[in-house]
Length: 271
Length: 273
Image (tube, rainbow over all chains, first blue to last red; front, side, top):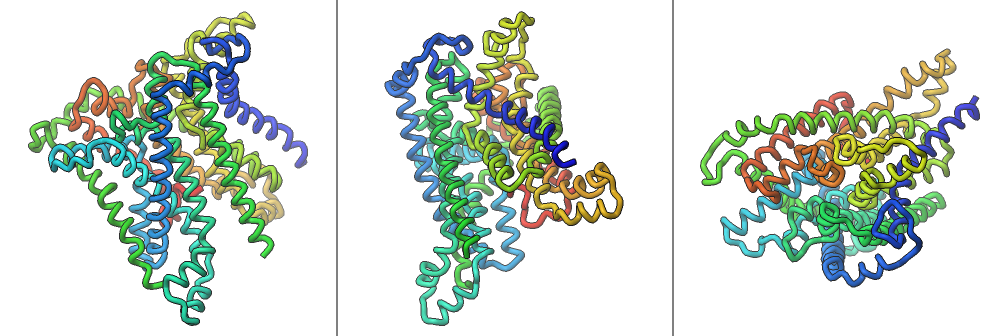
């Protein structure tokens, strides 16, 4: 009975996976195509990768993307971990309110987040004459931190809940200062959640298009914004090459996260 | 750890500065005109765009339903796999999800465009060519493709959490396979299904990237409308804010109504997969 049902369901799963992967695989194959055509194969080439490297706009956008992603991930991780610790220490009611507020940037569509931040920045810069809020790198960074931090909190929170509270109390009883107890007892136990949050933030920043589209200035456009601009005009196979590289990078990061989680789970199973 | 409550204050401040205040500014713009005086004209003028709202909702609802119809069986099949199989299937669902969604949408452009891969294939097997690109159908395909994982994962999580002994008990009591499904599995998978519907509908109804790339300006959605007010040819921040506000209200209502189906929603577990 079980065997009989397994065959059609496996076929169905295969069909869904083909639907999910075929477009990506095709895109990657055509990044090596020796022709501008995106449907006829004219032999293998690496020329799109080469012209990509010499494209100053793309290289500059890549630098902006990496800078904002690394900074936003680091700041969001510190802000979010600290917030998770604080929220964890709160009583039920304020904790629920803060967690619900924390959900707002996640539940709001990207476009609303982007538009509302952009409006505020413009308002600050024009009406309040606060020139630091003119659309540029800083506004981009603020926007990225805003959408990354909720995810850091959600990665760290479960680790805090799993943590043995008594160990912290024991450390304090034995004379550790609050800071020492945090560093020696709490931090090692929530470290995996922090690292997951960091990597998650980084991948989300790299991936973002919509929020960056509204909050970046003309000289600080991210890769996503540049690609979006290119897909609307004449499309070059360089984008295929760029997408292939980005896919491989994200895939590696994802494997890294999963490898970490697998290792953490195994360690826990052994304990 | 009583002393660490203050550790949350920087983030609370951040939420006020960069989430609450921007929302208030959207409110302010929505209810004022260019000169800064109070008006309701923005909302009145929005009636001109009712067709855009209608089209957006229709497309988002259809895409959400297709995702549900495709995603539920997929999640169900995944939950029936062995331990290793389930982990592998999960990762395979997530890989494209973590990838740049522009890339995924762009991949469909290369397939669906008039001299694209689909038509190259069709003409190779002597079939008539299809013109899908720049139609609402192309946008719908893009939505289903991009958001299907958002449907599969929460449903899968709720299916996987079902205690097997419940299913066995139902069998022992004489339930047929279909009865087990309708009386035990389906009700218990409602929370995941509700999350899935919300997580597909919200990005689908608010997207402008997919419609720009695959719709080619032929099918304008609410997202495009908002984008046009701010960065497009017709700059009107007040109108853009008003449309954003209406979209926010609609999405909040939709989320609340959908969540009503699933009552135990503590600490906003909707997004946790």
